[in-house]
Amino acid sequence: MKIYIGCDHGGLDLKNIIVKYLQEKNNEVIDVGTYSYDSCDYPIYAKKVAMAVANKECDRGIVICSTGIGVSIVANKVKGVRCALVTDVTTARLTREHKDTNVLAMGQKNV
Image (cartoon, rainbow, N blue to C red; front, side):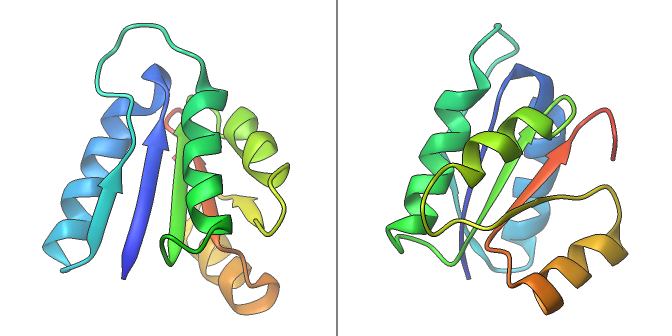
């Protein structure tokens, strides 16, 4: 599976953990940033991921910030994206099974 992932400075640690995990499971991961703890604007990275999903450049997307709220709002503004903010495995599974989401939003402080 090809997955785009992006975060702001508030989600960098979680993003790095997820990237490593997904790669170990033989997924192709495209990391669009950010790559440092320097303050940055979450909409830049959330939109990059959402656009890649909407344009069918990948199968799924993951967006991360401190709470997940901001990145989920941005992603859901892109036509063709169905983004769900999740904090647990059950909710993540159900959003795919019942809502056909294509972008997962998470908050580093909430997961």
